[in-house]
Image (cartoon, rainbow, N blue to C red; front, side, top):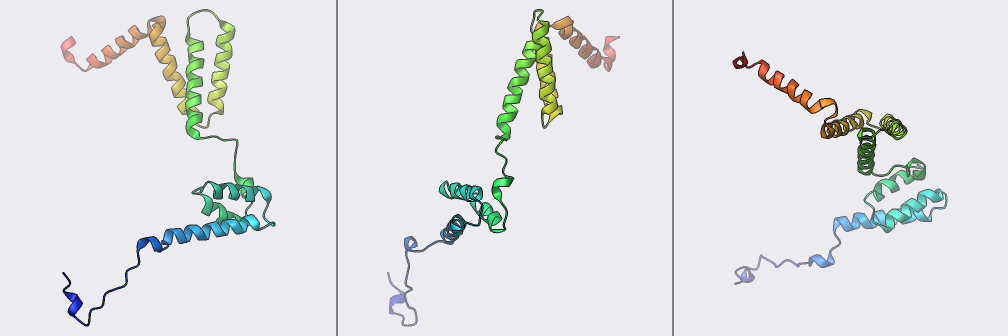
Length: 176
């Protein structure tokens, strides 16, 4: 039904399909790629920075804009990157596994003073060199307490139950 077709003041708009339009995002991405390409072609920029930009361009790295901006500002981005550090979560998981293994060596039954002493030394060094030593020490304490509880070392479980019972029932006057 065409109601407006007979009215002379209304003209039909020309419609451009979406597939022919270049979106604003594509325009920005294309401009960024051109800037990155100009950085790659600029021989006055150090080779390491250009290699990082080249790789970021190849993998469509989300940090490409930031990297290009830093290189354009004259910063040698290769000097500021630390390739020694891996993801933090992997370090945390490996430290936790290491702490658990060392705690197991220290707390296991048997008389192995050399192994237990070495494990204690490595445990202390691991905690000392950790970026979060208090958290790692608490993890070690948790593993040690759990392991000692499993062994009921020195009647530890019975003693803890007695302490908990005394504290819980201290406020309760029905025990008198």
